Length: 116
Image 1 (cartoon, rainbow, N blue to C red):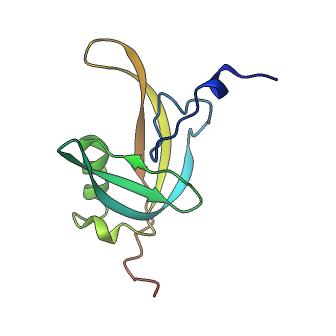
Image 2: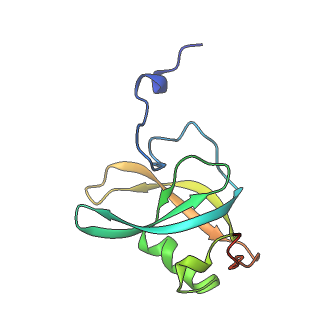
């Protein structure tokens, strides 16, 4: 069956909630492989990278603060932590509808041991 979404593949290294809507992530649990600080045109943001996923998720402040509150301010210690991943409808500042990620840290504590 042809799909319109296949005509616009994302070549980004990052998942985009509004573009990757064809994947149903509601309530999926993902394990953090690492967190890195990435530069986006002079604006530094944290990116979570996950085991068994080829792209990362760029964190907004709300998702960042929920992970800090649950785990630690040192994002290098987040490895092994688990988050529930879902997307929700929201509006851009100009009122245009879109989707956004909500990452809920689960009770599992991150594994701060380096595996090498």
